[in-house]
Length: 630
Ligand SMILES: [Zn+2]
Image (cartoon, rainbow, N blue to C red; front, side, top):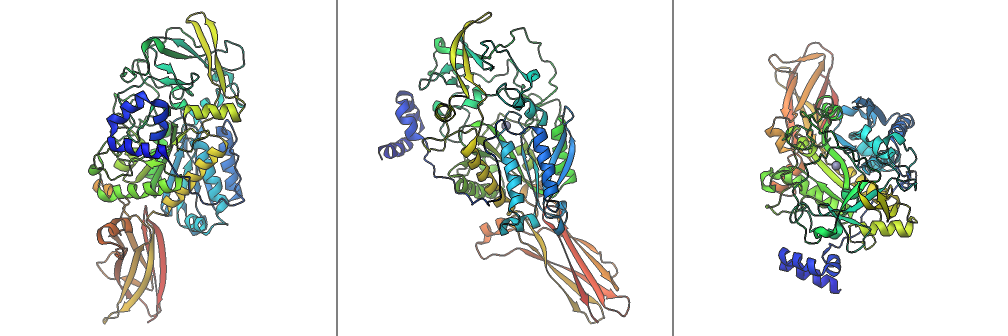
């Protein structure tokens, strides 16, 4: 009760007081200022959905792909595989497609694309996407909502985008099955079977021991105030993975670190450098040409050659090129992109476009999509957030400010005109105090109390030939998400994606009829309806950049023809969805239909058979036939 009152007061007094307060009264206030969250609100899981949430390491590439192939054999009507290209090392890049093929081919329906493993070290998305696929297929016969969605929409899922890097990460650790000694970095100096880390005192070091638990190494803060604008972060929320976990990409070059902020919490005589145990200290060759790139700096929108990890040119990575090709050329039915990351955030959050603009610079209708889906996400996940689900026009919509370019998040919205969300799934073991954050201390508590300490080696002195007195210890193959908490995260994202899938436009021929005209001709009248939530153009931005795909409607007549000068195929334009008109006209408004007409004349004496088809790449396809008796 006391804490609650305290936190309210702090908010009223504002940020500067909060920071001062935080500096002097750390242990008490940290807890008080954290947001209290509710529990996730999840749909029940059908009994036939089986998933092992205690697999660690997560399944390797071969197993994931083999399982997906198996699912296509188990559900031949609902699932098929696409081989969309090859990775840098020659692995096949697989995408599973889920839709009911009896209600039309996948590319004839509005589709959602979901990927994980764009960043190799961010492996949590892999089981999240696997779970999504398993549960979606297993639910088809059990849940009428899922049945309807799989009949009318298509899902494309790529659980391992950086197949090579993902393999490297998951086979590197000696403690894990699948361990590959050739991937081993460093040497097991203390002979305990693990390669952990070495910490050594260094006035220029980037780490310091946490005053709460000296096993935890906190990073000296890079920039004043930190780069996170989504929530008031504190040093206590620094997380294990972001700074001291698995080395993920290998694209962070020496000399390219962001400018340091002289953190008052870490005097220079208490700073440390951290190295891999048994690291080779030979002089490294300077990197002149960046051959490989960061998978999320290699997209075309606002791509910059001077961005770290941008690569030599946009889409230079074969994996990124293959995905872009699939999404923009061969499968134009995709209206939504879910791009899962798990860079080790202390709390679940979702990044949204545009990354580098204020909320007011985005079209109102498009922004409204993010506001609405953000509130749904908050409700499902128990208070986790999307950047930003506020109406504060002074906030950047993307959380990365002006530092990231060539992102998938911007590419999908700005260059493809579709919607995209980029979740950062937290690396979460157990949220002991239920505040929605998992701190390094909670991770270690989980390790100590529930895992018999097997994922952490205590720091122990060692005499190193180059560095002198060091301590060896730290992370020993800590899983990013495991057990109950992995299950919760999988279920949150499953429910959220099911919600979003139902927001696509959905084009239907609602009515098809004919009227006899005085001269023996017939007027054929088709009523097209958008039964979805988004307009058929998806985003207003798509109209602006001419990446909207308008509705085309076509008539076919047996026993007659279309009158002279009239086209059988007509471009019908777009039909609005409730997202576009409810905000403007209020509940009760209806802009969801459009009428198309043709004049048809009989060529013989028999009845006329008239078939009308309507389709739009991102809104689906429908067909109806009537017979006109004379
Ligand atoms: Zn990432």
